[in-house]
Length: 116
Length: 112
Image (cartoon, rainbow over all chains, first blue to last red):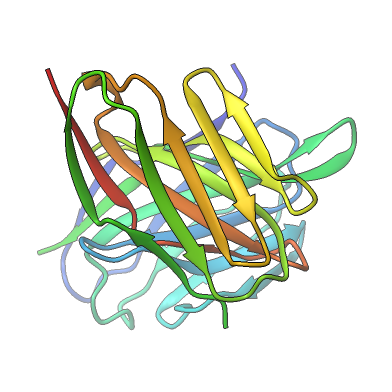
């Protein structure tokens, strides 16, 4: 089935460690996004990529890094520079219909990161 | 900068009621507006997408309207069921189509 797969679903990290969250899609979408969700707050954009080998910072990029070497994959690294990394992380891609950008976002099931 | 607000933050209704969730946005120059459903601990499921040139979209018991001039969208749920209990989020896509701004969500509980 087509969709967006995030892994791991749960991740625990010690302070000072970098961790990488995986996001893979087989929808043939060009644009992909990473959002962070905290209790009582809306989703906030970390990074987005509109095409392979290109990505842009969102509203809260500090302490995070991404790469987009393949169309299907958009991994997010949470570095030790991120002061408050405990959160729910969501990956998304933007849909196309018959080659046209529909502007509709589709999300994965999320990864919950807890810093111990 | 676009700001999206959802009111109420939480809503509890008895089964069978028709209900309306509200979403307002400050910048009317949007590409589209999208409604999502989120169950606890899960990702977001797309419910309805309204393009900027459209006034409404319908899917089953759901109907979403868009009034760009007033900066408002509503999600109407007919004959609510306990399975509709979830958090509903709206999000406005900017005119360039590359960034989505989310509201804080409305947490809905439908009681049997």
